[in-house]
Structure formats: structure tokens, C-alpha cells
Amino acid sequence: MTQAQSKKSAEFLDPTFGNGGVLELPFEEIVGRFPQSVLPLPDKKLLLLFSASSSENSPTKVARLNEDGSRDLRFGNQGIVEIPFKDGSSFSGRHLRALENGGWLITGTVEHSDGSTDLAVVRQLQNGQLDTSFGPEKDGKVTLNVYDLIDSRSMPGASFVTRRHDEKKAEKSSVSAVDVGTVAVGQQDGKIVLVSTVLFAIDYLRGIAVRLNADGSLDTTFNGKGFVLVELPGVTHNWNYATGVAVQQDGKVLVCGDFSREGPEEWPDAYVMRYDQDGNVDASYGDNKNGVVTITDSSRWLDLGSMALKPDGGVVAVGSAGRDGNHEGLIVSLNPSGSFNLVFNNGRPLFSDFTEHGVSWRRCVLQTDGKLVVSGQGGGTFVDENSSVVTARYDSKGSLDVTFAGKGWAVFNNESGIDLFRGCTVMADNRVVVSGYASFAPPPLPGYVVRYLA
Image (cartoon, rainbow, N blue to C red; front, side, top):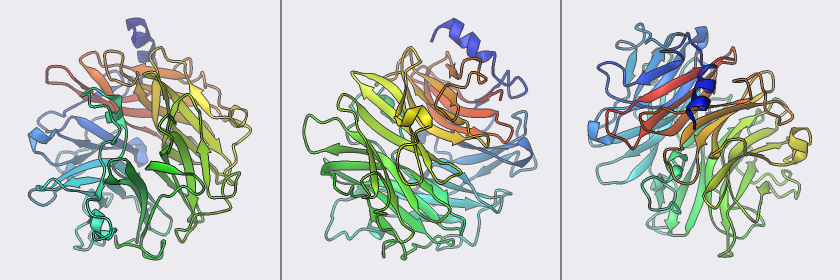
């Protein structure tokens, strides 16, 4: 990003937030600089989930922020609540999800001292206290070992993945910004759906969707087990990842991700799949009426990693398209039936190619006026000096909304390091909030939360 571009985007930052629209982490005397997720709260406040590096040995925390970005000192201890786990276990919170009672869910993973990794869900009340009606020990926490779900005798060696198995072995691979741990969504009846991916062998992985009851126990009415492994009907493939999830008003579950066909020369493709309320593949979904929509391009690697429900029951899914080290953002808009929405980009997948160095969309949020906010990692396959955090807004037809940042999109680049995207949300008044951090440079390096004008 050039200096001119940096100044241009800065013009559209909200000057009432932080320092000229930017709140830097760590907070004074508080350990933790990685802002993992942001959630809008009533009264124009924000909830921030943030964490520290493993070497700092400090628990994941949430902070409640006032409208100007200052800590709300009426929340927790000086605006901060720590999320403790048992000694020897390290909780990595990744996503926040609002609940109807004013509280929220935090989902992520727990790494134990023996190196094993479990899925984890934490439920907090609106004052930050752990919800003692949730979890087997009534401590507000649920952890799921892979063998709580899968028979270890028939599938030995299975594990939840936290990094892509096909990631290049370079430290600076941009897929480090991809979510392959766990995400979640709360249903109206209080049930919780998680998705993750299970590694069985080097080139054999399957997405998994898990449904919990309101008390955190496995909901065995879902596929008779409480979980379902993703098998794409009618599609022969080696592996698939599940990285995004949405739950419709009627309880049907949508899962998105990417998969690899059997041919060695085939590029991975993307998919959106729907299950009914009981965890069965919904055969009424998709043009082929087999429960799955595949998005293909023989010349590009495609993935989808985040979804947003539309008011009509359809869904928007976002991800990326990669080729020769370059990335374009990918946006797909589907009708409730799984057919492509003809209004959005004339019924075709939309590839975002307006940035000089490329972009991969990682989050999407639908505003109440129907506009779509997307945000993610700027740059190509490898993070370098061209890496940034990119945010854009589209109208319902798939055109860039030039009322956002003067041209429909904005780039943020913290010049102290290489930028990695973490989260995005939209406040009730349509101000967009994005989080990320700077890495790969001498410490101390900042994390940051950025707010754009509506």
C-alpha cells in the first residue's frame, strides 16, 4: 500500500474512537495484544476478545469498551474479565457470538499439556461472569475432545485441526489468517452449533458440525449422535474443511468450506451444504437437489469461510480465489433454495479484484439496509510488506458502495509490522469495526481495533 492510499483510507476513520479512529493494544499494564474478535453491544459499546502470546502465559480476556474506545470501568476489573482454564490448559478464544439474554458465547480451542487440542465454548453473562447454568461442571465452559464424538477404536489418531494440512511450510504463509479451529452460532432455542475439521490421515480430513443443548450437553437428536461429519453428496473427494456455519430460523444448518477432488491436477473448490433440523442432508437444497452447492473454477483454488443469513432465508458466503500466488475475494449469494441469487452480480460468484496486491475475505456482515460488509486479509499467498487489512461494502446488487470510505473499500496498514486480519463487525449505526495486529518485526508490536465512519 502506498502512503497516498494510507492517507486516503485514514480520512474515513472515526475520529471519535481511540486515537484518530485506531485503538492500539496492549492496554496499559494489561497483557495481551491480539484482538481476536469484536462484538457490538447496546449503548454503542463494544466487547473485545483478546489474547496474549504463548510465551506470555496469560489467559484470554474480554474487555468492554465505551463508544470512544476507552475501557468501561464498570465491567469486571478495570474493564477487563479474564477467562481462566485449568492449570496446564491454554484456551485460545477466537469468536464472539451475541446471545438473546445479553450475554455471549466465546468459541475456540483448548490446548492441553500433552499437546492435544479440544474444541471449547465459554458462555458469559452480560456482566462478564461465567454462566453457571452451562457446562458439565456448571462453570460456564464446555470442552469437546475428538473422542467424545468419534469412536477411537475405528478411527485411531483422529484430531481437530488448528492449521491447514496443505499449508506451505513457510512462516509467512497468509493462511495463518484463516480460521480452521471452531466457529459457532446460537439458535433461537438456545442450542449451539459448532463447526471444525477433523484430521484422520495426511490427505483425509472431514468437516464436522456439532450441536449442543442449551446446557452445553451434546444434542443427540442431531444425526442421532450430536454431530455429523461432512460428506459431500455426489462429489468424490479426498478431503474437505468446514470453516463457516449459519443456522436458519427453522433450525436448518448451513455449513461452508472447501474440498479437494480426487484428481491430482484438480484445484480445490468451495461448497455450501444444508442439513435439516435432525442433522440429515437436506435433499431439497441446491440446483441438483442433493443438499450441496459447489462453486468451481478450473483455474483457481476456491474457499469459503464465513456466512451471513439474509432476511429471506438465503445466505451470503465469502472466501477467496487463489492462483499463482495471487488472491481475489470471493462472494456468493444464494437464495433459500440454494440457487444463485440473480440480483447479486447477475447470479454469478463475485471476485473482488480492486486491490493492487489482492485480498481474501474472512468475515461478512449484512447490515439492516441490505448492504454487505466484507473484511479480510490483503495481499497474496505469503504475508509480506504488501499485507494489510482490507474492508469493503457492497450494495444488494454486488456493486461497491462508494458511500463507504469514498470508493467502497479501505485498506489499513500499520507501518510498524506486517498486518494480519482477525475480526470485523458492524455497529447498529453502521459504523464498521475491524481488528488485526502487526507481526514479523522487532517487538513491541501492536494489535489494533479500527473504526470506520458509516
